[in-house]
Image 1 (spheres, one colour):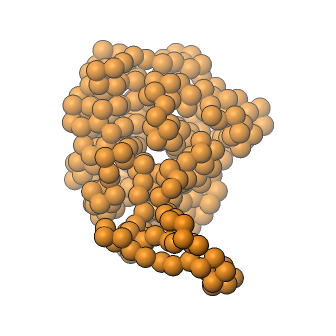
Image 2 (cartoon, helix red, strand yellow; image 1 turned 90 degrees about the horizontal axis):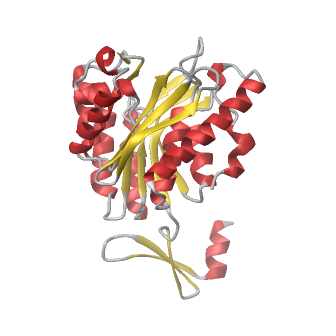
Length: 305
């Protein structure tokens, strides 16, 4: 069918001087790069509403094309007793090379969980190749939670993640990850708002202009600390709803990423993401959805603007 379409419309494939693939159809100049796009580099989980499975619909709802680079494939995420897992590391470079051949350009590059040093190096190379003057790089430096590093995150892997953060424009660490990035003691800063603010400033000084430290527990509230160099900083709070759920960080990062590409003010974007997630949590609690199953974002996805 595609062959017939090409003949009917007289499509020719050409490469410009920068080796970008273009199409000429009936004399009209077409390009793969006429729509805003975000490259999302993360794992794919078939069940459990996290990672790419939530990034794709959320970013699409905000009118940006979501282009996926899978780092691994899970049947369901690791909080369940059993799961299928397929590491995609050795396939990533060939996968990405085909995007280079197509001459793709991205207004955003967003990264999630990266499982080993090779994946981090592949992502750093991806950013060096695809980042243009108008490209926003968003890094969610997934390394740990509740004051503890994930088992796979060695000192060397944490160092490499810090190097990746230096290439970012926006970073979205939780408070544990902010401590890893800055060398702070989690137990000493967890309840110290002044030290949390200093951590955000220190992270920004390494490269990113915008930092939001997420998931800060304060009695009946969950707070985010928003820092934007030379613009604004401060805590935003939201009333707690239920307990921790899978995928909320991925939804948060997806909204921040799409809004960045759409030139939404950073503080406004963080407020939007927090409000949306809270509404998702309310629906999920009302339906008695298991924590591992994530949040019912589909019910209100069309309200995202």
